[in-house]
Length: 309
Image 1 (cartoon, rainbow, N blue to C red):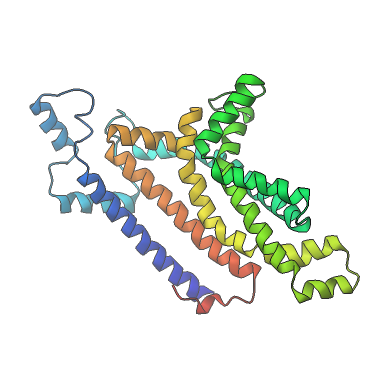
Image 2: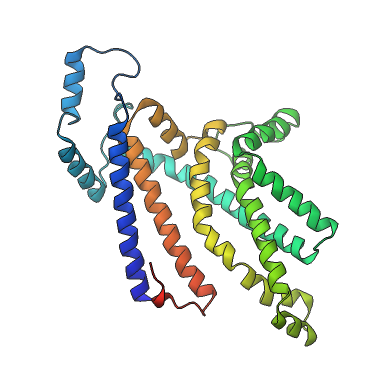
């Protein structure tokens, strides 16, 4: 296990370096700069700004300074928001995005596993068809369409929930459901397919022949093995929820990292774009590593030490 974790950590650092490097050069390849977006400034002022932020330095010096800022986690100031640093933006915005993502993750796992289990147990019955119709809708409808639909029905027509903004639990319900719709549908279909396969195995028939109750067969013998692919999907699910929150936060006016990221792209705020990208990359790589370890814990037959990167 220790050897495997060390290998995964090395792969994680390599992946992070690739993300950092690609992000840096993509930012340099984009035409324009953050100081010429709103209005034309005199060339003297532009030169002073470039000198102040060291944008006149050769690319390799800028790249070295960028790597140094990542290592020391001093991501520098924002180019567009005066008196605000990238660290401060992440510190203020991430807790909001984390709460929204955590709620969406709970909804996706809880509802997805429940729908998939019911669908598998009641295969080819109305419960199965109903659950799969919901799953197809969740996969087919984009999150921003789902968000607009939920706002129209539950906020505007029924006046049950706030239409937007952030601050109370009620204001988090609609964006969390919108963000969880796609992963819920995928988990439901994944759980159903694997449970049907497991239910046909010989050891399940043996357990039933011994007189074990159907509830114990499902909970202790079937569900655990059927959830292995779902655990594998957790890394991708985390990525979907984090990146999917960008547009959801914009629609609902939530002051999380997603809205900061979209605004920074519009403003060409290089330091904010690169800082948030690296921050999210670190979170996703950690999530993928954790999923690999959890997968081996759930299924002891897996020999993590022999896994090949």
